[in-house]
Length: 82
Ligand SMILES: [Ca+2]
Ligand SMILES: [Ca+2]
Ligand SMILES: [Ca+2]
Image (cartoon, rainbow, N blue to C red; front, side, top):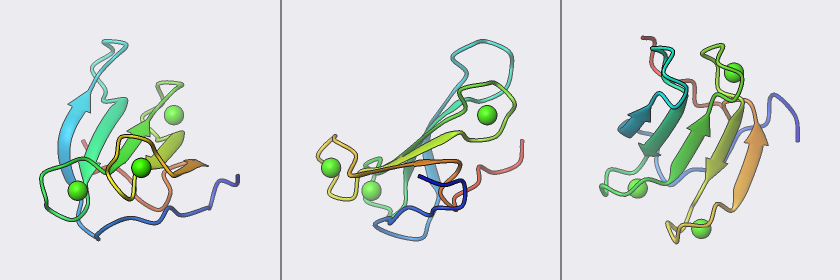
């Protein structure tokens, strides 16, 4: 895995179905993203150290709930600025 690795996604949209703040510091650290507009999440991102930047990106290309691809960093899909 490398910081600049990009994930394969179903589409090129970024529809944030869920944005979570799991450590309650007021900044999002969990994202569930639908990239193809079918209403189902196919990319999941986590900020594990609370700096606002994505540390782990997972892509579930067939939407079966098990990510096929897991990369360090945002996988080429940075979150919208907050
Ligand atoms: Ca989708
Ligand atoms: Ca981070
Ligand atoms: Ca899958």
